[in-house]
Amino acid sequence: MSKSKKFILWFDELGIEDVPIVGGKNASLGEMYRNLTKRGVKIPNGFAVTAYAYNYSLEKAGIGSEIKKILNGLDKSKKNLAEIGDKARKTILKSELPKELKDEIVNAYKKLCRQYGQNTDVAVRSSATAEDLPSASFAGQQETYLNIRGEHALMEATKKCFASLFTNRANSYRVDKHFSHFKVALSVGVQKMVRSDKACSGVMFSIDTETGFKDAVLINGAYGLGENVVQGSVNPDQFYIFKPTLKKGYKSIISKKLGSKKIKMVYSEHGAKHTTENVEVQYEDRLRFVLNDGEILKLAKWACIIEDYYSKKAGKFKPMDMEWAKDGVTNELFIVQARPETVQSQKNFNVLEE
View 1 (cartoon, rainbow, N blue to C red):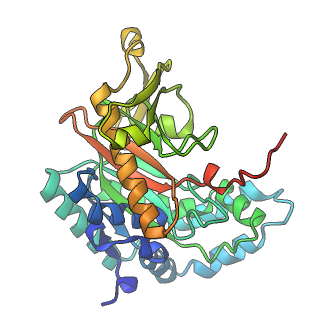
View 2: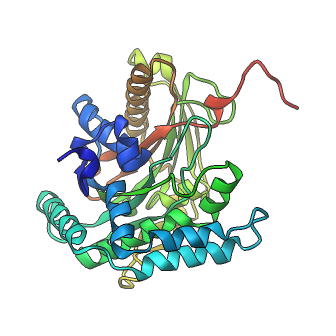
């Protein structure tokens, strides 16, 4: 059976050329898992529920044409944006996933549980097949669900990811970019969670995001799960590392800036509805950096490995935007996501704007 007709593909079966099948996020995870783990970059294992599975389940439930009809009612002024989005999402959430798809997801989850321990906790992330085209970034428009455990919760999270292809923000963006709602499909990434709720996590760029300076790695980090840093709801610690001397073996941290880190996202004990919650960070912890120098340098080295790998593959300089996490149980660092940086790298540096 060809890749494009499978419901489930594991990270070690995926590469960057599989964006049409599993979206940008999953294709990139597969590419790194296959090629960079042997270079020392740690990536938690997982699998993708494919875009084919998404299209198949809409067709099997007989709701594809219904969703088309709903979205064709979205007027250009977007006055009815919320109402249309709500209708489209509810149509998917009310439908039932086909039995044959459910069976494959359950079998894949069981295999992951055998690798990491019974009833393992996973992150369930949306990966749209049109993510991060050279002219547009669709990243962050769809949903992510953290600390998902058990088969039933995984099915629900998968369906919610499918429905999140039609968030108001995503619908609006596609209208603005003159991009068809139906040329995009959704894949779902199911990845072992890193217990950063007991440690810290954040984002990392292989370029300075303010100035576009190419020789720096910028790391932002805060306590707990990474969503707060990604969404900008916490003021993180900030670390700058100089790449040229780092590559020569020097400990080249240029600057460290303490963030206020007032809240952290942790696993919630309040049952299935809320799998995570924000709690206050103790005052003395706020005064400490979330990473030590060894960890900062290790992440920066990984950023260089990832950037060099993707640049070589693309045949041109390709700065990267990554998400990292530290496991508070094992004290190991992991990369949980990487995509091309789409702001500074798209700028024309021959133009000065005022």
